[in-house]
Length: 634
Image (cartoon, rainbow, N blue to C red; front, side, top):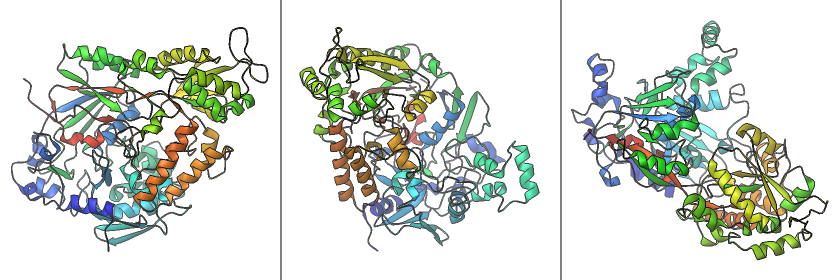
């Protein structure tokens, strides 16, 4: 069987011989009490036969030493999911260059992007020491994902092609396979995602909560103990992997939660059965514990700048940088700036589905969107808000993406009030009132209410500048702030005319990643929520796009989902990026903006520079925090 590009990456990375893993004297002292009491087997028995070898020196880093703990601040209990993101243990994941590689898996093979064969590492164990086997994959797929009671919404989109799920088979004691009749290029990226598609559960543990395997009386007792009325609620609660609230749930992550909510502090301890080692045979992670302290989001910057965090980016914004940098003088911390991966840190999103008929007609006219974009002085925003450190740009991919073209970034993003005025005249807004504000065809003044969740002072600062820019071309801007949940529901109800929100989330995509963020494919896309709802519900709710260019983007996404090969996917991506930026479906402002990151001055192997975003870099995830370590205090 011929190996394709993805297969080659998987096989090459899996053949490194972990001979040094059997060396002696490599046990973390943190585990020594359990080893002395025979509660844990020795390292040689805890590791897979072929662990993943991470050559730390080859990464330009320093092989580390065991020990210590990292404190970090979170805004709510649900943010313990950050440990799943930071730990970034995936069946198949990205490296720091966003190339696919096997991680939990020993290898993978993809044939025509239709047939995916996964090989499990022999001797791989869950964090409780139970073996990882094909039964864990079968249980997840057949007894959970295909169980209508547990997965009432059906299979995840990444598992469906033309509405059909995959065929699953257990090939042998170490091999499972998923196959479709046509290509499914969405499958591998969904496994590498910050919030990954779940394909494996610890079956030996989870079967006690499943009515198919558990005695009814025992199941009823478990439901009562955990205050659940239905067995499905019990199973879902106990199986949550992305937000690991159940300390008893075995995991494959580098650190495991030891704290049951509710709590003000969560402690994650090293997984003694984690499958990675460094080139010297030391089991990763180097750091023994992460301590997550729950705090009000509004005071995270103050606490981080007061020495209460050893690693912090969540809860910090660029406006905190000067204060945090000053903390270096008082505490043993360092502050650096990473580049954010969003296509625009903030973007104006005209709601093409707004219930206001006059404004819907105007905003669906590309000349209106282009005029509003051309009227914005991005250079002034960059200098005033970001100290000139960002890049004025449309809402599009960054130069770090192989799909980047300068024309995408420049599309209708120059400051040209004269052309903006001409375009506004062309769409029927020639008449102006005594105050210089244009008059709508129905006699109202051209007042655009821009709504925001008001979660950053940067938002207000930018909108005040934009209000001045738009007034020069006869458009009035008013700001309305509401809570995030209210904000989103109002958008879906057509009550929002325009919003200020983040730009495209993934500004560093490769052609292997789904381009759905550039088309109406989700109901939380604020520029076309009804069209997005129509797509994800398969026509059950919402409305189909009645704008030809938006409908074309949907067609192209569907074409990508049937593509087989990098060349075809690259062409589709290029076409979509050109169409999206030319049509100005979102009005980007400034991208390549900077994210403050605070970290302990003792922390080693932490990159001074990086790409910071949820997807695809999983914040710190692709930079492998399991290789970070703490040096002795000076």
